Length: 67
Image (cartoon, rainbow, N blue to C red; front, side):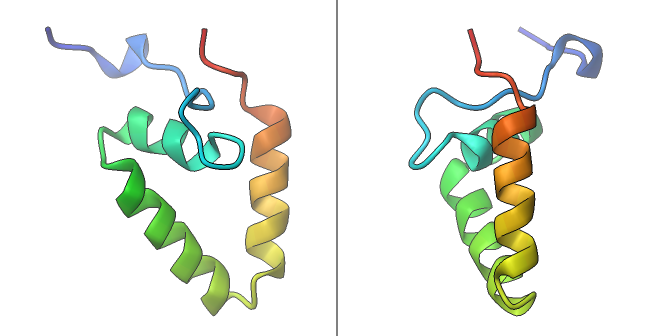
């Protein structure tokens, strides 16, 4: 079944490791959740971790839970 971009919503994944943010992003993009988590980790470390942590917390609050 083909899903158009208008049918997709960015939501937190129910199978998330911490809050489901990276899993939700992976589901939205159609990527592997492990790849998104690894990319997030490296981007966060390269940005001295503080901005990455703030972005994660904001997304945790803003992104709705998948139903």
